[in-house]
Structures are given as structure tokens and as C-alpha cells.
Image 1: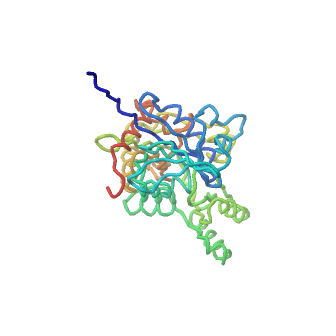
Image 2: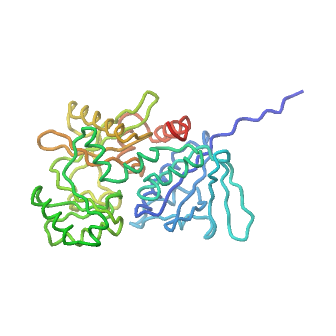
Image 3: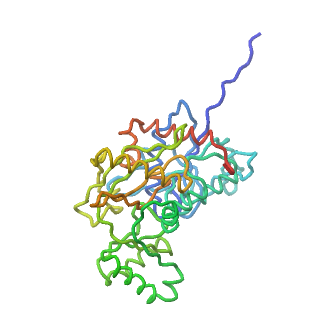
Length: 379
């Protein structure tokens, strides 16, 4: 008598992308690259897009439709299989079933999810909010946990943590929502005094943003108010940073079985058609980086040490891209980390690991395997 044996099912990966932040389109582009790289012989894949108004939608598994075409940015609404209803993830840790609920229809089970690959950038996804939901649901996920995600999103508290661990940061000042709303003159005076100490130009940024969205280079007082209002369109809290003169150098950190390791670094050369490495330069005009960065063995070893130290200081998991300035004095100043860096075809994080001997598909697989072997909850 022959036995009726059933082969074990493949792990099911939910790739969650899009979201409510101003980095929605870049998240879609990242998702397209990740979906293309996942080994379909090894994993089942469930693409879930979050629209700009927060609806979780079942989307087409169509990476070819997720790129930037003719300077037009993609969005989840164009990929969603339905204009109504949404995907529901249970918050019961004993039930990893994902359900599609549409008005007037019987909820449709989409199967269990074993791991989530969240490729959201910015608030409502990269900042610990989605990670908290996944912790409640008991579903493993790629990348940093709740605390590290939140700290890694907020440039003020990220810098405070760096300082407490002895990492070198540049001068900065913060304009909190209440300051600007109740006494803009006092907030403006604070920034002017900061500029008197550290000089112009200043960089005015959303405190909890990324992809260089909402950033303005301000050369004098006349442009300050407009720059603050532009940053506040993306985040009510604003961070103002002094110019650090130096070369822009980045380094990737990846979790291996024996702990985090750093990639070869990359250099972002000065861009000629832009004031700085802004959104247009990164994603529309495709400013390219130099990999590996031509900084010498000693400086390479130092930035790798600092990148891992930054990863550890914030209690990160999985991956990080750490961004630095290499000053004229040969010292590194850390600018920020990204706990979910871009995975677009031109993104520096995959390029640095490619040059370090880890291919794009291997990089994605390593992140998924690390997530599958890591428990949720306190760890």
C-alpha cells in the first residue's frame, strides 16, 4: 500500500508596500524590485499594497508595472485588483490567515502568511507602526523592530542615541510643532542664532521623512520660513542641520548568522544639476554612486566599524544603510541611518552588497531567512 505523502508547503511571503507617506511611490518601486528577486521555487508570494488613504489592497503581482516610466511615479491604486474593500490581517497570534473583505461579498481567505517583507518608507510603515501591528499578529517580518524603526525614522532621537553611544554627529536644531504654531518669531530667532554659530547654508528637513522628500537648502534668512513650511507639509516636526563640508559616503549593514557585517562603502558624488542629492537627483535623474568608494583601506575599515556601531546603537535587525560625511580632516560624521533603505534597481544598498559578494536575490533571501528564524515579541 502506498502512503499518501504531501510535500511541505513553501513559506508564504507577504510583500507589503505603498503606504500613506510622501514616499509612497518609491516604496512601490522598491516592491517591484523585491518581487522580481524573490525565488518563486522557494517562496509563495502575496503582494499587498497600501493606498495613500490607508486601504490595504490585494494587488497584481506585476513588477514590470511598478517602475518609474517617463518620469511618472507608480502608485498602489493603479495596481489594486479592486477599488473597494481590503486585505485584513488577524491580530490573533494563533491565526495567520489573511482575508480579503469586500462590501456585499463573502470574505475570501487568501491563506496563511509566514513572513512579511515590509518595504514601506517613511511614516505609517517604516516608523514602527506596521512593526507593532505585526508583533500583535505574531507574524515574523524583515527588518528592524518597533523601537529601532521608530528611532531610525525620527532624525532628532536617532541623533540623540548616536551621541549617547559616542558616535560623531553634526550640529542640528529642532523646531517642534507647538513652537512654530504658537511663536514662530521665537523659533525663527533660535534658528538664526544657530546659523550665527554654524553658518549658512542650512538644510531644513521633515524630522521623520526620507528619500530627500521635503528638504530645502536655505542660503539665508529670506528662505527660512518657506523651507520650514515645505518641511511641515510632510511632518509637523522639523529638523535643521548645519552644512557638514565633506564627501558623502554610505555603508550597508546586513545581518549574518554570526551577527551584523558591513559592506564596502559607496560615495555619492556631487550632483551638477541639483543643489544637493535630493529626490529628483536620486530617483528621477538617477544620480549614480561610486561603488566601492575610493577612500582607502583605513577609512573603509573605519566607516564599516561606525556603520555596525550605529546599527547596534539603535538595536536594529536585518539591515541598515548608514550615511556619513567624510570631512576634509579625514573624520567621519554620521548623518542618518535608514532601517528600510531603498531596494530600487539604482539604490545604493543593493549595489554595495553586490560589490561585497552578495547578489540581489541572495540579499533578499538572506533577509527572509533571518526573519523566519527570528521570533516576534521581546528578544
